[in-house]
Length: 157
Length: 251
Image (cartoon, rainbow over all chains, first blue to last red; front, side, top):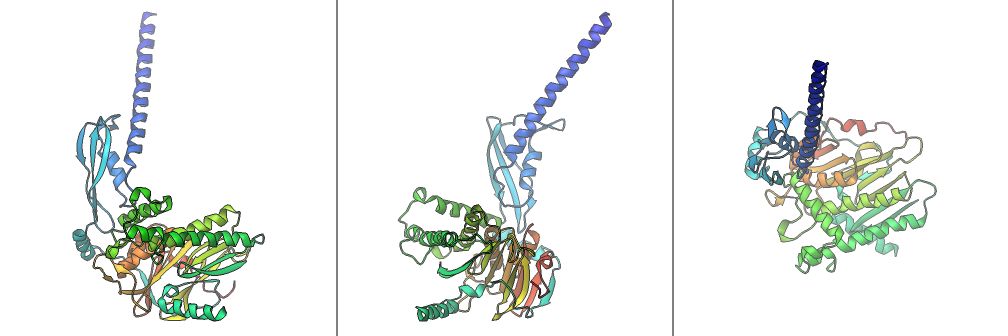
């Protein structure tokens, strides 16, 4: 009887601990996701994921709070250069995210020569059907077009 | 119901196929373009942008729409590695982003009013919804030959997206490469098909300034397709572009 009672207590103790740990981890995952998604508008694809994976890890699980200090992320390839972020932790929370590297001019000219351009299909342009609803072409904003149009409109007045 | 008016220095065409379209719906769209023109035209000395360029306004007194445009322009500049730039030659000219943004907002006005088959075309940047006829649900859009105004070199079948074309005008190349400060003259025309005209327009301006590399930027960007014509009449296009091309004459 006593053995059974002790077993039950131990098992329920483990069960409660497991629930506690799971709850803690869910919170920290949420915190990592929301904080990792700031300041990533349009600058390459790696940034937000990098912030998540670079945060403090404990036994492969994300911690609920961060250690104060500055942390530098890895260099990731954006289209025309590199992106690297640094994170400042203050009060155990993410205080700021900054870009260390940006597709810069110097890197840009290096990237141009080393970037392997994929082969895109090519063709000589040729006249197609005139049966269209709408036309898209930049010449409609040219000065010559505008002048001609204005002349016609003046006549139409 | 279709109407054309000259606004923002270009022909603006609005066509609504849905049968319940009224003149007041068309008017509402043109009134909106008029509002945009009065606020953003660098040719109007009393526009908000002209006042900003004369340092008569402080950033915290910019209108909400002006603040939004500056924010979107900054985002776009980052996203395109500085190839999209509104502050060249010491003056601010956000027209490269205002046009697509305004057309998109105009389309939203019609969408809110319940229309689903229409297009809004400002200076041949177009937002299309639904289609010309209710069976095909497509709009036929021609890409102009940059060397011959009367010819189309491609016919696209599109719906619920934006089509924008950048090119070299006959009287002075007007797209400047922000990296060199000089006119970009490497290519003659670039067309972008995007999820909406705001996306297509802001990207086409920046991609054109990248010269021959621009088409690769479009290829690499999800959701965009492009067709580039170089100065010798040779076209290069993205891998998904052909899915929009129509080869038949039938509506």
